[in-house]
Length: 386
Image (cartoon, rainbow, N blue to C red; front, top):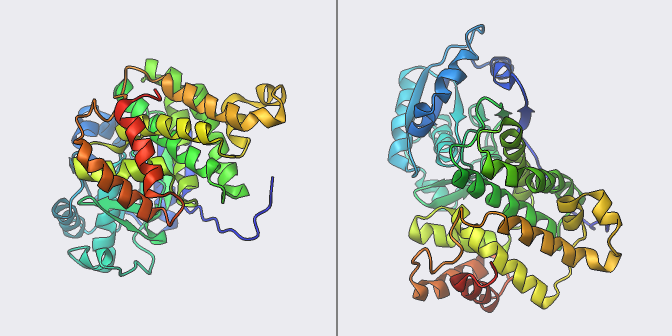
């Protein structure tokens, strides 16, 4: 492995994973001198009975749950964040627990900014202001579908992204009572988001030893447990492995440059409201096919992560990078039938693809051209790489 001339790596959240992990939350809150958290969750989490299981973990503690805000659905907006912030202040809370993934976490981060900075909107941050100080303690408990951003320094509110290192959660608690997937499609979508993030981290020519060290186990978990997780969503071993994979991939993604599939999926999601996971499942095979066609050089660590040491050692050195792309394609294609295979299938208006390509190319800081992005989008439109 080449040693970079210079790199930075920040992984802030403390990660607690395994049996009875929920019971550690009171002591973690005590470490921040917090005793009264507001729990932010979604209706789907409440309906599945996970909130009741979560509450039981506090029975023998001195922590008092200040309130449960369960109004989160598939969209995180500032008006909902204000409602949750009002409940936080009304109940005298001193910390936040996000029980769930995706929009639940985005909303929890937004609420944390509102109550910590004592403001009622985020307009200043959309206009370039930075979050420059520590926020209230934030603990995340993943449950069900992930959007891959839970362990990152990013939040998306009203389809607008804000990035700041103070948005990292303080603790992530992965407990097998919370992680079993709600449906095969949700497991598949969460898995392909984690795969896309880890793939970007390992194939970026500027990746460093730390991003590789974090992305490697994420890909190994995905390779072993994603096929099992989509066929048996309630399997606890598979679900907790995939939850770990999502957190690890997100940590690697936070410390690398976003890949083309990430950028294109984010832009498509913003203009259509369709989740990024569905787009990533379509775009990543098209990107891989394009990389194979152009014979782009990548690290052989992708192959090692996905197939293990035995197969890696048995493969000639010069074949390992391309075999890594083959292995990634095989893993994605194991999800056939669970998620859409082409942009045309999602009824995307084709004329919008040119603007998506342009914006993604701009955000890539000249790593990808407009033409590169259009090529991948054209393949994704037809689903020819799947």
